[in-house]
Amino acid sequence: MTPQRPAAGREWLLDLKPRGPDTTSTAASSPATVAETISHVGETPVCWAIEVGREMATTIIREIPAFGGGEGPFQTLRKGTESSTLRAMVLLAFPDVQLSPITEEALEGDREFVRRGIALDKVLRGIRLGHAGMAQAFLTACESLVGPDRVADEMKAVSEDLFGYIDAFSGSMVTEFLAERDRWITSAAAARAETVNQILAGDEIEVRAASSVLGYDLDRCHLALIAWANSPGEVSDLERIAEAQLRARGATATLAVPIGSSALWAWGSIANDADPAPQPAPPVHADIRIALGLPGRGVDGFRRSHEQATRAERLARLAGDRATRVTDYAEISAIAMLAEDIDSARNFVERELGPLADSTSQVSALRETLLQYLEQERSISTVATYLHLARGTVAYRVKKAEAMLGHEVGQRRFELHAALLLAQVLGDAVLPES
Image (cartoon, rainbow, N blue to C red):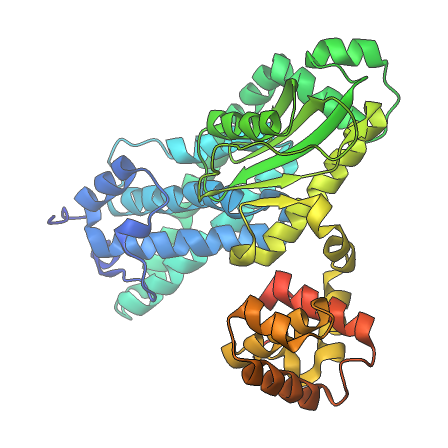
């Protein structure tokens, strides 16, 4: 698509190019926003804006962790930073065009910030950080693309235009934030969320009144679940999957509390606090992850099961692609406790494994063989059968691993076993950088 002719002096905007591999297919903004921007400035500057928007979102989350929490929240924030960069680029190139300074993507993020409980002062700080990153990107490009005879004047004009843009943008964000907060506060969902937060915080509550607000009996035995998506989507999808998982584990009633658009807390009432026997449940979509706590009775069990699910969620997020789609605290509680302090866990793994902590595939195979060797009570034949290897291969790997450790596996066996488990479950999160 041929770009339009921009205002005099702003032709340099059509020469913007990304440094990296971003294309329009990697955009977080809506196809309509991308197409509209391409119609004004062309495709390559749009790719530049996509790259800048990603960098802005990364910076904001690094400086204000409340905006983070996984891939879903990151993508929601990136929609806002990217679409705002696209909109600013059009308004810089075509000052007379009639476009709102704020995009629907940014407003969508604004509404999610309210539902996630992010304070207005953090939202405003995020806007200031985003503006700083956007301005720096535009001014750096201007300096390199505009001739020396007019670069100083152009940079001054761009700076003033961006200040006016972000001023109008901030005003619209504040207006929408306050309106959404008013809507949220008066909603039944907010009342449920507030009651749940009081329970989780350990506040004194009247159990019967809280059960009435929640529409869920707190006197029963509870199994907590956390569901999250790697990209923003329909909360109803998470609710449906969470309910199916809880019902398969014997729940007769469920409670779901959305946390933004890409996460959900849920509980199910089960018959007793024994480990529930899972029944076949619908498969979990590849983009969705589930974490489960242990059953617990009453308000304390409600809270404790959620805390355990939170630890399982944290471990799954640390494990990244290694994590299974469903992480059950009953199965990973020991590893979760070992990884509570991830820096200490990383130091422990490096200290106990030494060269055996290398992240190469060859050393990873040695660790897997050694772990199975310990778990199978040092039976070479059992390990060979389990890993589909020749007995000689298993024996060779064990000897090689012992040589790298500097001692036999019988020494410091507990510490060695724990370090191998951490490396298997968490991978790069606890292995030293290559």
